[in-house]
Length: 97
Image (cartoon, rainbow, N blue to C red):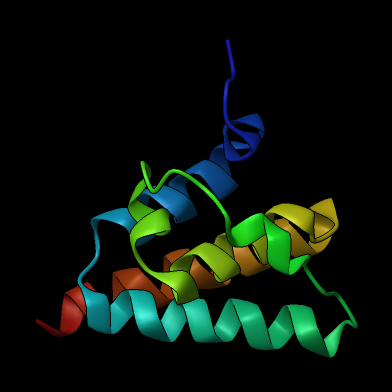
C-alpha cells in the first residue's frame, strides 16, 4: 500500500529516493532546479506548510522541504519529466566520481 505521494509512480519514487541518498551538493542543485521550475510555472506554496515535526529527510532543511512540496503539487506529467531529469543528473554526477 502506498503511503507517500511519491510512491504512486516508480519514476518519481526513484528520483526522490536518489535525492534522499545524495550528498548536500547534489541535493542543493536538484532542490534549486525543482523550485525554479515550479515558480516559472506560476506555482506557489503556503508558508504555513513549513510548520512540521521535522521527521523526514527533507524536513531538516528548508530548501529541501520547499522543493519536495513543489514537486508534490506539480502536475503529474511535469512531475514525471522533472523526475527523469533528476535521475539523469544524479546518475551522471555519480559516474563522474
